[in-house]
Image 1 (cartoon, one colour):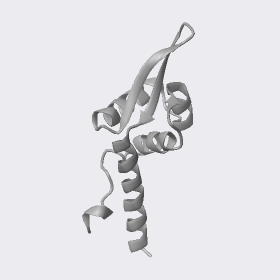
Image 2: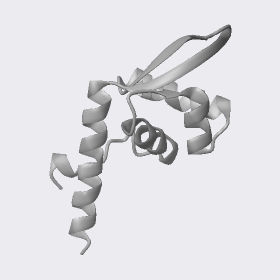
Image 3: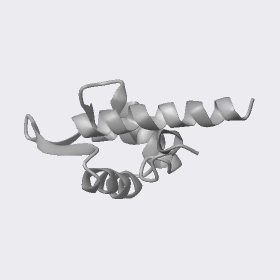
Image 4: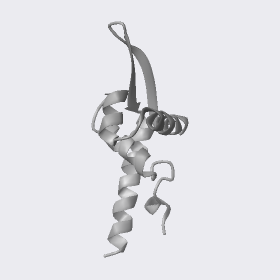
Amino acid sequence: MATECRADEVIHSPVRFSIMATLAAADKAEFAFVRDTVEVSDPVLSKQAATLEKAGYVEITKGYVGKRPRTWLSLTAQGRRAFTAHIAALRAITEHTR
């Protein structure tokens, strides 16, 4: 199988894939929105987001809305490219099964 047909091992995890898909649809998303969309707990999202951040795919930004602390997640340019390539690889794999 050609290199371009290989799924990204970092993104391939179902939870990380869901996080990437959620973030691909926006410039940035609040932590709670991603957590609720992906349907995971705070600790699970924190751990998986940290893995994606370490890979250079996600940027985690902390700040405040009024006096309340908030965390936002966003895809980096590298993350967007990796997600697009991962989707292309999945499509290529499914094309081979037809």
